[in-house]
Image 1 (spheres, one colour):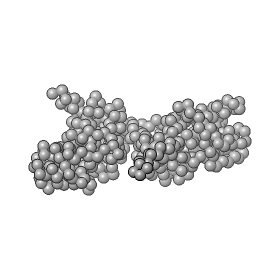
Image 2 (image 1 turned 120 degrees about the horizontal axis):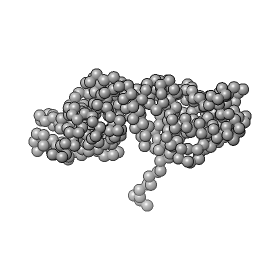
Image 3 (image 1 turned 135 degrees about the vertical axis):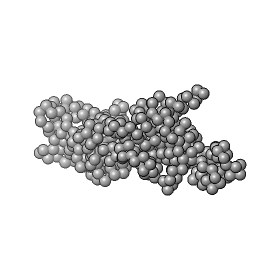
Image 4 (image 1 turned 120 degrees about the vertical axis):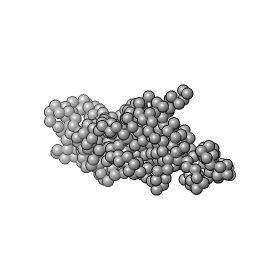
Length: 376
């Protein structure tokens, strides 16, 4: 029918690196025990679902067995989509159990604060549990001792890791083997939020008393220069200010800076904790009302209400002698403080323009002041 809406296609789920590593390890261990590789190989996900993976490569020698699975992230824009996740297994010393090693392209943890201690391969706890369960299942079935060395590798993983936050987390040499469910949900951005949480963990474990979350590269560089903060104290929160603040409430640090550009901080000021454009645009009529309240004449306020962009609105106010930045920062502070209540932290908001110039600031104040203000 003319004008009919096309149905929205359902986004396809994918598999985590942890699930792929488990499938590859199970296939390799089966070959080590029996001389043949199951293909496809079936594994049990943490939620109880069985799923199978086709092998992309396999190798059996007198000393080891290896298998590889190509990661399919579904419709999620994952940097590891299409990467080969490889597991090489060899027999370990009697009574040694399962030993994990980082092969080429898999990182090593170098800083405290993560779920895996320094010196260990960056294979997270749930993928380790999945691999152990798969090996133990086969060992029981074939009456084998289950003493094996498991080396996980990802060709080109060190290059791919440069597009992640691993370097900042102190994970060197490659990617992490991740996943808590085995399933990648398209556009859930769970990996980014996971990185935010782990960045906070590393900063706390390293004794950082002041951290700064930034919405992008420009604001991060600007807030680094403003406070002289080390890399470890800088959290690239992107649009997920709510995800960062909620984690900080239960994992607090004494001082918190939220830094961002004029558009993102205006959204925060208007009560949004997810700053992505898909979650809503800036409320320009609301910005117009604020501009008039802080000194803009009615004519300029009306123009701000019709502005093309937030930067345009700020420029309109500035050229007529009104600075919107401090008012936006103050409102953003109230939004953020409402999430952090009870943490005992003090917080500031800093707003930067596209060139990294400071255009607005709400100075450090205890977040408990927000609760007091609401009671007055």
